[in-house]
Image (tube, rainbow, N blue to C red; front, side, top):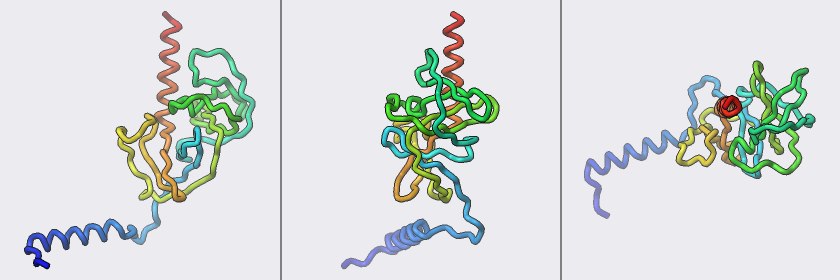
Length: 181
């Protein structure tokens, strides 16, 4: 075997040290920062919602439909003594409307609340912030996803509730403008 030049040997040593530092778990002695997530499925795809971005979770509410030019708006539901507009999370993410029984409602916001419905709730997951990764838009098929998380041996796209709410507000504003014309 040919001996490595001093520069090549040093580069290999630095690469090895770098790789070992990245492979070792980060432990600063301080308590590890975590993120609480709800694990859900939309059209069989794995997603997560940050618990900090919602104000509650409800189940099995009657949704009263009414005519609307906004296809994602399914109707209203009575939640916590108020009528709350209910939107299809699947449709907001670009899927077709879910045809199976829609059971779960994620409540978003306390002033002007909205509910986002989805059919499959898989559970609560607490992950280390080191398990959250920024998603590059070129790698993400859905526009409301800015992060992905590796949780319970599965990669899940993390739905950004603030982006979803902005989309809803924009859709409602566009609908009001078209009605005025």
